[in-house]
Length: 413
Ligand SMILES: CC(C)[C@H](C(=O)O)[C@@H](O)C(=O)O
Ligand code: SF4
Image: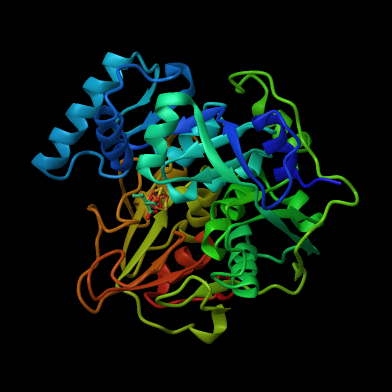
């Protein structure tokens, strides 16, 4: 009677692992990006260590401040590139390759049954593939760099079941925001979430990534969709090694259960400054916006850009609209299939694949008193610029709002 997390931790620790136990687990893949690798490498060097445990199992994408925004960032990037070369780490993704949580799945590092740990809180995204994906701090990452292992408390699991077919212009993001609004920003603290129901199985891989990406926004240690044919098809020719899918037992123990109604779901928006401050879009419709941002590890995939392009096709945006593809391959596909052209013709700005202004680093921060509707996962106070206000919504809601200059229900344009 085990949950997916208990089974993954049992394999990774080599002994039967049950919720609330402390175990030492072998990590399958470890990720740090330009932001966190700096600190992880510093702490690794402080330990007096020379070589990482296994260069092939470390993945380093540069995405947070790319291209470098200041001389300081450029110098830090330079140092990390040197360290990566010294260590012989083959999985290095430099400026323009994309956001870590897009790059790892695209390159087959997120696989069912694996323990994938990242020095970034949204590493829970890998749960979309049936992995236990979780974020740790940079010093914990240095321990993993050193020995490939880390202590974990095996999490309890909540079960979220979503049923019903989503309506027109109601997307995975709306379901995700609804789930966070229902569970609450701290409702799943140090717990894993397993997602079930036809609404979930109907989601594309991209939609499942949106959902699992935001598990941390309800405090979750992980968010996991049981792998199915869609998962296996996506991983075909992509998975970097063999994997074994893991499923929960019928009588697995859940500490809480939630039901989400997909059929009657309206487009959702999270109001400033908490992610669980969620409401139907109608409640905030008409709120003037200064900027629209479509991108991030939550909603910067091809499907998201296509949704936006479809709404903006042949029209002109009323406010500045930034579109930042989640990865180089998303951008290439968007160029190939005409999506990029539609967005540019409508007046949107296309940026280098990466995090963009998501965490307020550069490329599109907002000014004092400005309002942005964003497809990202966090709307914390000041995140995209001091004194700014962030509303979170789906790419459809963001694109509809771009057309009118105010928060708009995509079903009305
Ligand atoms: C910079 C990094 C540590 C951070 C995170 O862990 O989530 C960032 O990606 C974010 O989204 O705020
Ligand atoms: S896109 Fe945003 S949420 Fe995702 S990793 Fe980058 S900064 Fe963090």
